[in-house]
Every structure is written in C-alpha cells, then in structure tokens.
Amino acid sequence: MVFSNQKTDTQLAVLQEKLNAYENMMNKLDEAIQMIGTTSQNISKMLAVHEEKLETASKNDDAILTMINDMKKSELEQGKELHTKIDNLATKVEQITNFRWLLVGGLTLITIIISAPTIFSDLLTPDPNPAKIEIQRPAAAATAEPPSSSVRRKPESK
Image (cartoon, rainbow, N blue to C red; front, side):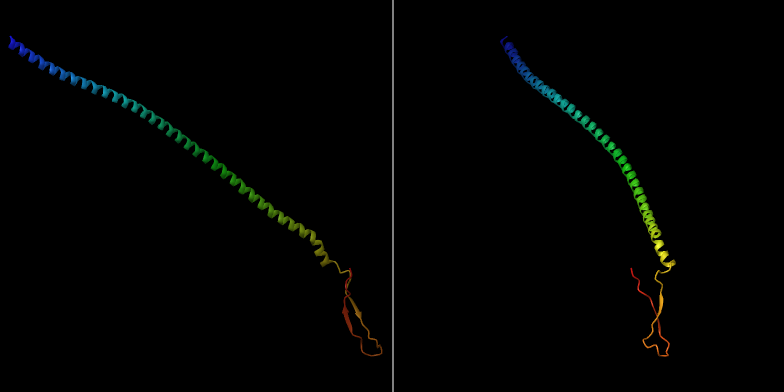
C-alpha cells in the first residue's frame, strides 16, 4: 500500500500541478477577457463620440448650405433691385438730357424773338440821319467851272 499510496500521492501532485496551471491560464483568460471588455467599452465610447461629431458636422453642413442658398437668393434680389435702380437712373438721365436740349432750344428761340425786333427794325426802318449831299463851293465863284460835288454823310451823334 505504500507503493499505491505513493503512486496516488504522485498522481495527486501531478493533478495539483495541472490544476495550478489551469488556474493560472484561467486567471490570464479572465484578465484578457476584462481587457477585451474594457477595450470594447472604450471603442464603443469612441464610436459614440465619433457618431455625434459626424451628426454635428452634417447639421453644420446643412446649415451652411442653407445659408449659402439664402445668400444666393438675397444677392439675386439685390442684383435685380440694383438693375432696376440703374434703369430708372438711366431713364432720368435721358429725361434730364432731353429737358436740357428743350431748354437750350427754348432759350435760343426766346433770344431770337427778343432780338428779332432790333434786327428787323434796323433793316426795315429808315436811318434817322439820312445821307445828305453837300455841294462845296470854292471861294472863287467867278470861275466858270462847275463846282465839284461830293457825297458826305454826317457823323451820327449820340
């Protein structure tokens, strides 16, 4: 029985060694599983944060696109208003130019009408100091030669 007892003790010692080895492996597996669980949780948190950032970026992109479209509409409306104002201004400038030419023509006509009586009166009315013919006689009246005649106009006195 001693022999069998030794054999059993040896077998028991071998089994204890194996059991210790399995326990060691189980502890390492537990640690690995815990690390994998922690890593999985960290990855889940990172994915959640990343998803949130993606959603925020998508919302920001949508908001930016909306703002760009609104600005385009606003710029188009302002462009149309500016075009209308330019057209109105061009029309007003044209009207002012036409009025200016009408005014110049009217003033010219008024000037002609006002100065016309003096122009026509000079042509149609006789000169108040008509030309006179004077005969100059020489001092010696005894000569038989006819006296020479000259036409002189008297200077006008004002």
